[in-house]
Length: 139
Image (cartoon, rainbow, N blue to C red):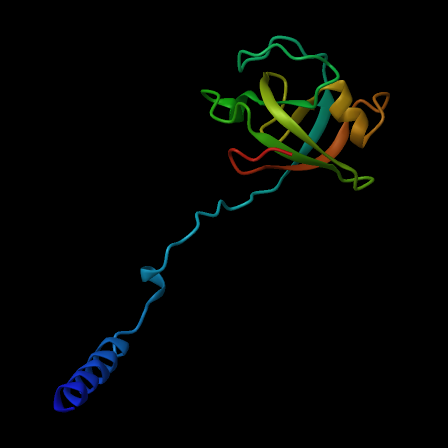
């Protein structure tokens, strides 16, 4: 009986001792979140083919070319982008596969199918807002 009481006392003391150590946020596993940065610029369209990323695409695919100022060494190749026409609120997801030499740093050049999802090809130029989706994300 005495050993049972001693064991119970020991367990109670151990519980009190271990519960005195607080758990801090740094002790918990964290998820890596990327900050979303919205860009506003011109959206135009082009006939796709062999792009700077090394892939041959077709006009019916949702493809986007980014400015040569942003393209750099191609770190955004195969990254999805969310693009919104600021005039009508329509949006589309397009895959980064090319570099646009005539685009300003916040401009994007879309395949005909991506462009026609958010505007009329006859318009030619749209005011758009866009951002990259997280690397590895796919619609």
